[in-house]
Image (tube, rainbow, N blue to C red):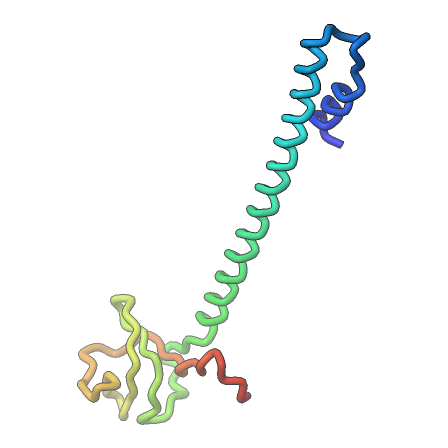
Length: 129
């Protein structure tokens, strides 16, 4: 038990014979306030842990996505397969490659060679393997 709760227990055990009435009332009020603050602290700690867990899940999902990127220098992509292209300026576009030329999904040629590509992810509701 932490010191604040031990002190609150001590204050709860005071009787009118230990202190004048106004001080007993103040002691009971202080004990109640210490318990409220302790409960608030537990709630805030739980909220923080929950937020950290949510953040951890988001980071894990991002890392999983990053693992799915393949450097264009590694190859492994069939011609005319639509994928996500990562460009040097941190933009991501759907596109495809024919030979050494990359194209946006619209059919317009891409002026630069993407740094990475990734298969387009399935819809989140798609349960097919």
